[in-house]
Length: 556
Image (tube, rainbow, N blue to C red; front, top):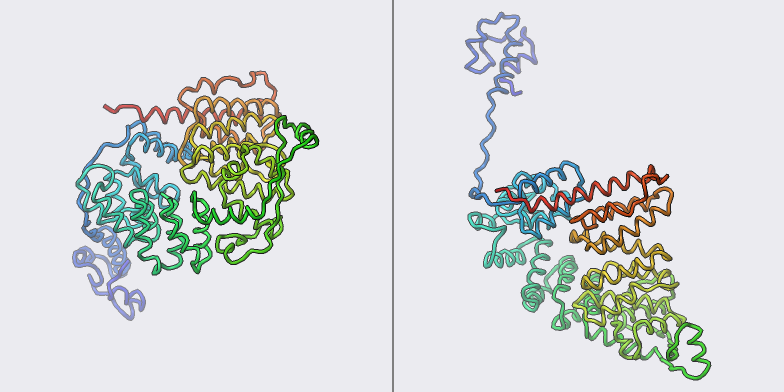
């Protein structure tokens, strides 16, 4: 409350020292009303009247006029899908928000207007949601985000960009406007916008994008170089090799490491060829023959030709050229320094090189390496190389090698945790190859429980990254294994709760008949312990079924 100077002085000094004349200290409009108040009550009546006058008559400042025109309305998702989204935002199955956004993007539906503000707020708090929300904003959502700098920054909306296109149609600038936006972000944007712009440019024209990066590379700060160089993984090709070779001499270790990784990933790179030559000088493959060799092969389960023996000589030293190629840069826990160099060299050579050079199948190459004294270093490097080989456009040989390694079994696999190491790269394979791997895991799960864990991790990874839903056949296989595991246990443990939570997110929900069958009978004595998990699973599947159906409803 703001008091008039006269009234404030009277309150501080008292009426005896600063008498208050009738009507003094009050707004002019209240002078007549306060004139009839007795002298002993005039001070407090004046204070009360001034307070009520200020609160009741306060006019907020007029908002600054927006620089953007009002945005026209446009069609969004159905009302049923809107109600499902509102339920999710109000806390009913909030874990399915990513699935709702992914399905809306698949069906080319935009966010309902009633959910724009809460989703923009949520995206500003949770960075993983930003790309999904930005893709569904539509013209009105982009216009709204441009009114609030906090939203505009996290969603990647430019005020100028949306002002120019507010009267158009669609979900964002198109054609020349899109190109202008990318160019503006590349030249003037923050670091995140520049990285996004560079990736977009690489998708359109990898050569021109790399030349744009090269043009100002020497003047880029170290932090910018560290963030921009990994963007060349999009559209990576041999024309990028010369620039990446120069980046091997960068002053920053992180920049050099990124260049080393990209060159090791690039098929046919000179870095890979240099590592092949170094390993060729260290390896000697001896073909074995004779009765003793054949007997040993039969005892090991090999009925064909005896496998050759690999003799390995560890590197004598790690010279500057090897260090430039990333050899020995990272310490390898649990193994000696020279074994670590051997691992780094193996990681830079595509696995198909060994099967082609030695004229052996992938399984036979693995058997040869397992029999070697330094098998842990050799196999770990081979696993890293297999993951790199499928990160670019994988050929049939790279896929076969990856499947061989990720779905193998034995002491070496369990000791090195090979499936867990390759799991992040499994989505690089075609869908059919991925399901082939998971089926092998499920076949192994009866004797090797971690195999089921790997299958669930793959399913959850697909759900989290792209809201992928399993095929009906894979859904039945995963659920059936979970039901068998449930029937064998008296009560759920912590891992069981996590397994059921994953199943609830990834199982096919188009036809739920399969999900209602194969459960233990009603007289099963352990139902009290398992019922909450099963009920939550079925409730989530029914909610997802409703969510998917809601997008197909027609408001008309």
